[in-house]
Length: 193
Image (cartoon, rainbow, N blue to C red; front, side, top):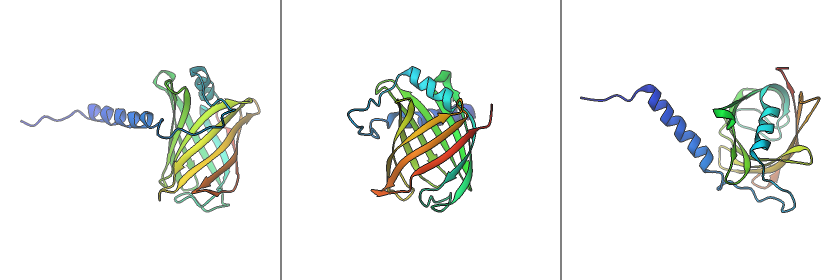
């Protein structure tokens, strides 16, 4: 007699595997930081970051390079994103849509390394790993990752919030395989307040 695995159990097993793989890669993707800047964070910092980002946003994005599945360098597109906190405040998940592309985001706090990590995967096959920490009142981001064809993505940026948290600006510089890209200059506005 053949036994069938209940759909719910199968789905939970797949999700558990996905979350384990996301959490377990943090040491592999560790970013070498400027020794003068503290890149560690607390659980309280993570909660503050989530409260700052959670919700719905609309933005104007200018592509800093050709992103397959999204658009060409210099294209200006409207982007939408939505972030929610779950699992007792231990994770923030999000979706983003920009031009014809989309992506999934997972942010979490790693208590062992005392770091906030945000990981994003796009419909174009790109992967970004963001080490996030607060410095001088702004959220700083050290990025590593790869393009769909295996080129290395790296860089630093700042996510600054103004207008009582209603406006979010991304600034900084990334590179692909060591080639510096145009500067980030994306602006998002909160939709849900």
